[in-house]
Length: 163
Image 1 (tube, rainbow, N blue to C red):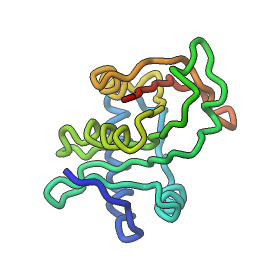
Image 2: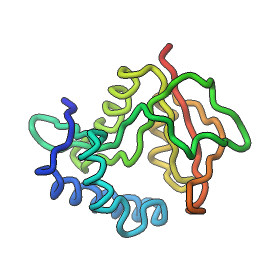
Image 3: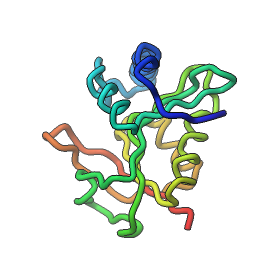
């Protein structure tokens, strides 16, 4: 598997991937995390433009996509019912989705991100059992709850350090 920056030409494939991911989430007891249109086309375009949108390819096929940045995440400033493992600089992974044929792609993406900065924070919806299982399998520590901006709800917050 290989990871590269997403380009504007990838947008139709990204929209199809996230549409399939929303269906998968709904079928697996998590219809509310992304609803019917998250992430939006405009959000994906902004991620691509800012060079924080990545694609994982397996033998030339789209296997997964995600947003990765090493900028501070404002919603992570306050954590409830727990604490972050440290206050060191960290990377953040958002909007990760794997294709149906992308077996192991999400884990590959998360490990790729960890290799870039050695400290990853990520959050997920309480109903996203597949993601919670993946994070546990990869050795992420549950740290507490964070609140999304604009009152959009809470998320389970996780962190993993390699150093």
